[in-house]
Image 1 (cartoon, one colour):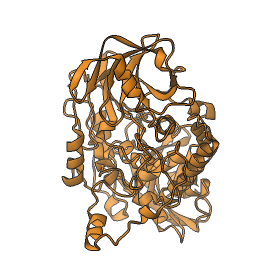
Image 2: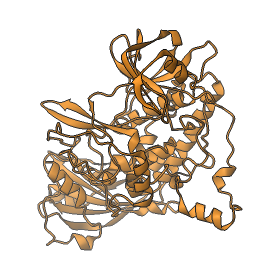
Image 3: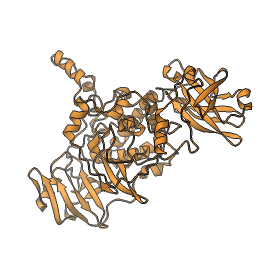
Image 4: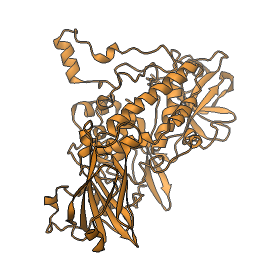
Length: 547
């Protein structure tokens, strides 16, 4: 079944009627179980070995070696209705059904966080985010990270907010809890070790003191921290945003052509997750019935929104790569007289927020720290898919999620909420209008086609000038179309199938739909929808956007 899904995903029909003439027989386009909602992962992956990815090499490889396959083609892991099936990579959540605000606020959390005595098991003083691991009174393992003294509440707030949002989108993430720590409550466990510049050694009380001196201290002497619950399963290293993992028999789709990784570019731009790179994900081996599979997790959201983890986010973040040849060359040629536009952007002085803004933000030109092969490959239909998920988050839910960061300054909550909402609107205006926005097609038993327009539904565009529909009978066995009737033009999102099409009682019918709007030329890109007879009615079995 996996092989069949793979072939179906990459053998899209050309949408010119000349290319759909009889005689171009191939494997059937649709099978009885289409459209599938879960990607079958039937192989046992227990033999995989942990993969370590060097941060330095990852930067060099993606910045200078043009990693991955950049063939312009559709995402290869979508179902026949152009959706991402559930898998070890992604689980449809708000993209499939509305969630109440309280469920969105809860996110991935399954408890109230650490409880009882905190016993340190290991620590580190070096690295981007010094911290320690500990077990609470129940024996549960947590990873503890602190806010920098210059920006109390910033990294922890960004981590809590972004974790809940990425979970709502559909990704696998850890449970991240805000926690209050007092020095006297921390116990050093037997055999607890520390990593510092000299290597690994047994941890001592002075090491805990040294670590806390690098953390923001609250007025009452306590420390606010993020307690990240250890992920389920055995760690198996990181995944790259291109290629496949050779030791995982279920990993058959090149990562740069997976829609959930391509579409992640939209979510990353919205939340300024410029640190979306391989070292900030983790594969874990988890049981799945009698087998073991790899679950692909995203983690470390401390460098999102306005946070740069150890300081306020750099103004460069989201605007340029760490190495961006063109602006660097212009600056050199002008002897420094050229001033990059983002340098002129001003930010409010709100330490808990850091640096994030919505005025200069441009979704089309947002960039992570360095090129990401999946982001580079994202096509309009991938970004449209992600933008619809963004649209599914109600504004009141976004505000409620920001409030879970528990900022002590009300200005932080208000500014960050307003900024996220303004950036959301820019995301929707850009990517819901970046292709044909027709969604939710239905065909009644009497042959009336109805649909909706995602751009109009979210108020980022006004009414279409017209829609055109060309009907055809589709032969699934030969994968060919036979046009029926002339092209229809309608001004509202509904049309009646020709009587001669229905009277023939075909098993499959298809409609080629285009939308037209003077301000949004991309609306006219083709959308092909397929319906299969289901008793006396019809069910949607296929949808191709921009084939």
